Image 1 (cartoon, helix red, strand yellow):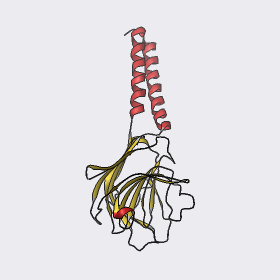
Image 2 (image 1 turned 120 degrees about the vertical axis):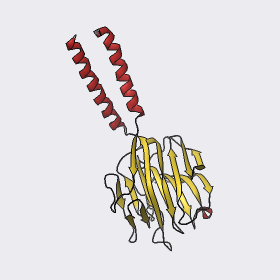
Image 3 (image 1 turned 120 degrees about the horizontal axis):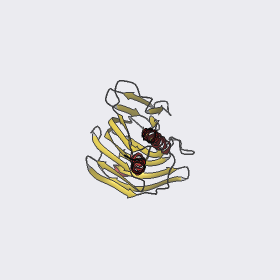
Image 4 (image 1 turned 60 degrees about the vertical axis):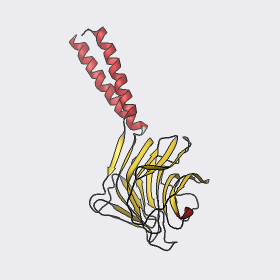
Length: 244
């Protein structure tokens, strides 16, 4: 192939490489294997005296506000799937767009971010699913669907934050969804926590089975991959030209 014919093909290859990089996704698959937390994926915070977690070779139980914060950053669209069960009076929360920062002045150690909440017991209308903004300036309920969350029953869930819309699916049925502000962000991590605390009569615990987080990589990661692809293609071009 002549150099003139090779150059257009080379340019196309570059654009294909960079385009596929922009669409690339990363996935964290957490199976809670063994009996210890995988610190490559999570950091744990135990804000109260009775906060605790236990890894049980396939599931994790969070009690009394035990909080997990992802090590990785995730950018929309974010999809989180897994299984969850709640104790008789617990509330469990998964937050996207968080840095793990506690809301200013919040004695219950609530985190800033976009909340996806599973409620059982003494909270909103006795139980249900909700989506909510949380920041240092306050909270704003975006969507709420009442639902009889049975204690101890295992539910399949899917949470989606695609940047402009958010939804919660339970056992394959969409129960809560709403348009959301694409500019709202308190961070780029994911947090999971049991909302109950020692301030309420217990027990308060949530158990999660294997979960998966799928999202686009942070921009610096995508840029590095794209640059590596460019360098490789440039090396191939030089080799081709020197052989001509």
